[in-house]
Image (cartoon, helix red, strand yellow):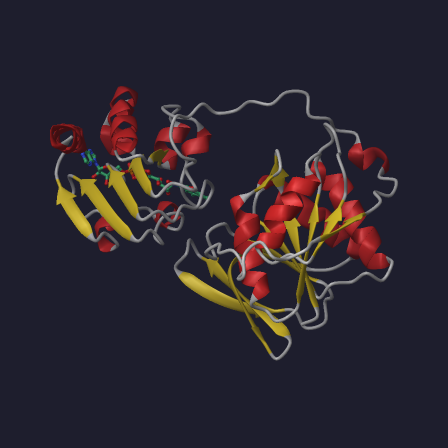
Length: 324
Ligand SMILES: Cc1cc2nc3c(=O)[nH]c(=O)nc-3n(C[C@H](O)[C@H](O)[C@H](O)COP(=O)(O)OP(=O)(O)OC[C@H]3O[C@@H](n4cnc5c(N)ncnc54)[C@H](O)[C@@H]3O)c2cc1C
């Protein structure tokens, strides 16, 4: 394994959490780790990326209000076609990451491995693990002759850790050209909407308190928000209540929502469908509150409370407040 590229999404100079996870993993594969990034603050991003093991940053530059997909995929494909060919490209399974991977696959006429939840290196090859059938089965895959191997990796598959010794690496920044992209690059971002939140990001929080249909009504979600705030955590939700319009999609946890890996996950009125559990079962401790003692969520819970969440959660809130 000579060279591995990591796709580095960033905002305001801060790389996405998944990027630091991928860099940490890539460092262990025995090759040189390089990244491809874009945006107006590549220099400040490069410092952080270097701390996590990047030796070189390929900078696509400021793409303004264009969608990253067409430009970034074209820039990477042009490097690869020109002979600057890494052994693998690791891409986070984000909206832009998936878009870039698909376009790259088409441009390079290469296959792509998606839904990766683990990668190991051995004998100069990378083997990837894939969670399938709602997380009930782990499948192992390897590219036979695709170079670079394109891997789309789920967030929280690796734990991000800075390289040692920290802060002593110099990072080379190399500007790379975006070739003509034609009509594929016509879309422009005309507005951005930031979801309001007062605590940590859902996928970064150490504590997640999640609510489901068992809460009974949209108004009861305020209990989830209050408990999350008291525990300095983030509120989350099952798809059932997102689909019902109780809470925004940004709060959805599971197969078609976010993957979380907090220290503590508190599931309130959530049955534990496989599509939900695949997004939270890696939490260190799982506490479930459900009035049905047969609910599947109890099969993975470290602590199960059989009871009415709309009564148990207020008691919990009361007890926490009384302690302070
Ligand atoms: C392709 C696909 C993708 C999907 N992706 C996702 C996903 O990303 N995330 C996700 O969450 N789901 C996803 N789903 C939906 C999933 O299958 C379930 O339908 C959903 O997770 C159920 O949500 P829930 O547990 O809130 O509701 P329910 O399954 O209706 O469960 C409600 C639970 O609350 C309990 N309860 C009722 N009243 C109370 C009370 N007063 N106190 C305590 N407990 C109570 C009940 O016993 C029950 O266990 C997906 C489904 C498909 C087909």
